[in-house]
Amino acid sequence: MPERVVNNLRGIGHQVINGIWRLGYASRFFLLTLLRSATSFRRFRLTVKEIYFTGVLSLIIISVSGLFVGMVLGLQGYETLQKYGSSEAVGTLVALSLTRELGPVVAALLFASRAGSAMTAEIGLMKATEQISAMEMMAVDPIARVIGPRFWGGVISMPLLAAMFSAVGVFGGYLITVVLIGVDEGAFWSQMQSAVDFRQDIVNGVIKSVVFGVAVTAIALFEGYDAPPTAEGVSGATTRTVVTSSLAILGLDFVLTAFMFKGA
Amino acid sequence: MDRTVLDLWVGVFVAAGIAALLVLALKVGNASTTFNMGDTYQVIAEFDNIGSLKVRAPVKSAGVVVGRVDNIQFDSKKFAARVTMRIDKRYQFPKDTSVSILTSGLLGEQYLGLEAGGDNAMLKDGDTLKITQSAVVLEKLIGQFLYNKAAEGGTK
Image (cartoon, rainbow over all chains, first blue to last red; front, side):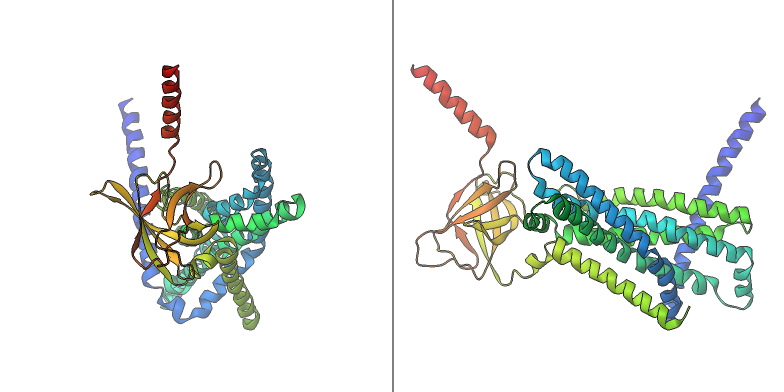
């Protein structure tokens, strides 16, 4: 019996040490990516190609979901606000929820599942087929050549995607409430403009999306780079990317919101 | 993929992203109104109670926004709130202008209302407004009402 207890304790210890070791490895990997990112800018073409894969190809999913999220916000907001006789405030509701929270968060979640998982799978497969080792053999630094451009491509794409999500969402809210339901157009825009502050709401939303972009791409690249070089390993790493980055987005969002909107 | 096509798409993407940011800033947000509040001058007013007035609250005269609240401090000598506001240079007010804290709507936010006086001299940068009216505090109002009712009852 004590044998079993000891074994269980050993198991827990092993898990914890492993977790901390992985965290340290991930931080070192992240720092190394930052330190060796000069190549991504000196040969900017590499980064442009990654912006195409992570940004341009995510455009459709981002704009369609933004449109629908905005339309749903408009419908639901109208339903509730109408009870209090202030249906014109629906513009404020849609714009504030999109620029502050939904724009950065939902865009980042979509980005993680659309671009993050693809990045992990790609790098994991490169590792499984020994392309990364081959690069090292040819004295090409894989972190500078493969990881860096993907990282910066993701970090550049993410805020742009989030801004598009919010803008399309506001347009969706406008379509539903003003064009379809018939809320007064002037009041819709003017109330929105008087309530949404450039520094407080829009700039903070952009800061959030940059932070999410860094988190999602760093997690995706690390999981890919760290994946066991087997089919099973790559599939596990892809799953972990989506799960970890979604949790990271939601956790970071809470922390950032707590710092940004202290109820001032 | 062809280089030029790739460049084109990335260019379109980045331009669309920046355009979305601009739309958010100008159409959704208030960057258009805050940034073109050109030259301003500062006016100070002291209140016994500012209620829930906040920095950046509008300063209105006749319902038109003429400026914004810049700073709110507590004056520990006079035990009063010291409110600094910035008013657009285009709008000039007489020296004996009165200022009061008003509420927009029943539950709306509080703002400063300027009521022009009759003085010939105009307000200058850094002037202090003498005639001020504090925010209405609901509890005091109710308390006063009850006190008056009680006093009425006593005389009967």
